[in-house]
Length: 161
Image (cartoon, rainbow, N blue to C red; front, side):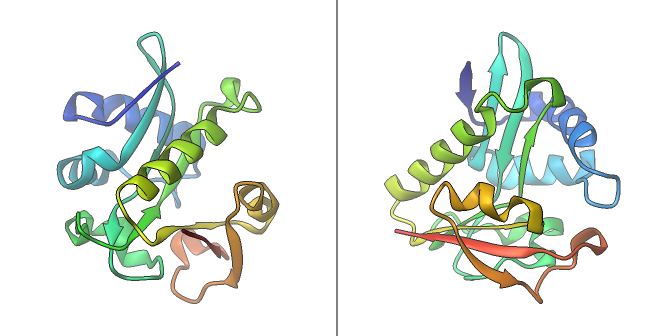
């Protein structure tokens, strides 16, 4: 498995994987991914099996300590010198799940953030995934009032270095 960052050449594959992994109300659009790759392609971690994109994780960097809904839509908020690595979406194609792909991407993103001198990383997840992210040392900060993305209740989780 190869892990690398994103370029515009990856746009179609990224949008297709997202569409398979998230409900329409929660999924980013191809246009949103084009903006994200434009502003922070180096903060996408893409996992390939051969030429096939099988999983990815993305998120920008900011000095804001909490993940907000605005961040999903405004890639221009990315600040390469920011303190916190936000993690927006961890996607694995269904047929590759439960094989450690997501965990490997999460480890890589966290380690990259640590090497870049960030304060830590922040993500939001549904209640059913709190224990999963806790295995990677993310601490549940409870239900966030700063994100109602897709009409869902989200827990904010943080790893601080």
